[in-house]
Amino acid sequence: MIDVLVSGAAGRMGREVVKALTEADGIRAVAAVDPGHADRTIDDGHGGELLCRGDLSAALAGARPHVMVDFTHPNAVEGNLRAALAAGVHCVVGTTGLSVDVLQGLAAGAPEGVCLFVAPNFAIGAVLMMRFAAEAARFMPHVEIIELHHDRKADAPSGTALRTAALVAAARNEVPGAPGRETELAEGARGALVDQVSVHSIRLPGLVAHQEVIFGGKGQTLSIRHDSIDRSSFMPGVVLAVREVVSRSGLIIGLENLMEA
Ligand code: NAD
Image (cartoon, rainbow, N blue to C red; front, side):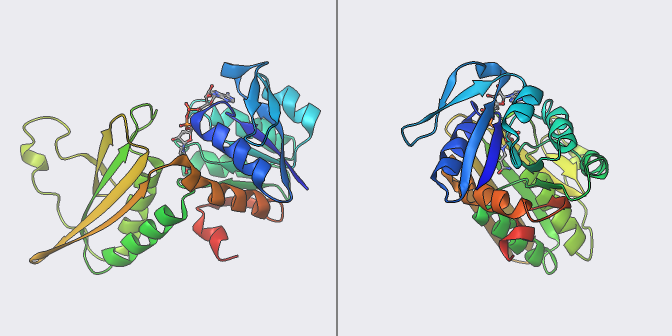
């Protein structure tokens, strides 16, 4: 049995994670932490409840989990990871906003044999979208990214867009210019430049998590689009990561590194 502490358990993702872990064979949610919901309960979706704690260190010491899953806030995640890794707890991280440098520092300071796994996107379809985009960029270097999320998302661009831009930049053989930037009539009209790829962020109620990668070539365009229309789309990836981290160590970034295990 893999015992898991869910950090950010009262959030939109955290609540789904508690339910998905409760449903999964060989895994159980043993602790829930969320300062915004301290001393209240979280429904596990299967007739049970989990008491939510406000203090992560106390919950780590009390529940002694094998794994912590973190879906919190860009401002909170680094401190949470520092505490969990120091306690020898493997980490599965969905919270976005952490730089690779910070992640490498956290992993370097972790005890031997502990795994820090981070995925900018846990949806299998989104991982495939990024893979297909990297493949297309080899042949069609003119590319822009439009990412669309719900209006409560804390950061922009999304972690998925940043990762896609990095993959596309690494895959393409030439860096075409981004026409129109020099004559922007309103600041930001041409989006943010990430690894020399223009990224446009849309925030609207009604959206969950969506991304379109558009390639342009002579007389043609190619669009690769992924839509998470429900947060359940992320759960198979989270469950897979929980199963995998207990037998791995060090820093791993991206669900693609676990999918063919
Ligand atoms: P949310 O605001 O609904 O939930 C975040 C929760 O974290 C809140 O309940 C808040 O009280 C809690 N929290 C804040 N500080 C905390 C702390 N120090 N310790 C524990 N809990 C704390 O947000 P959400 O929509 O659930 O998203 C959470 C994060 O996950 C965001 O960074 C989002 O971008 C990311 N996300 C990632 C994926 C992915 O596939 N990687 C998918 C969806 C969302």
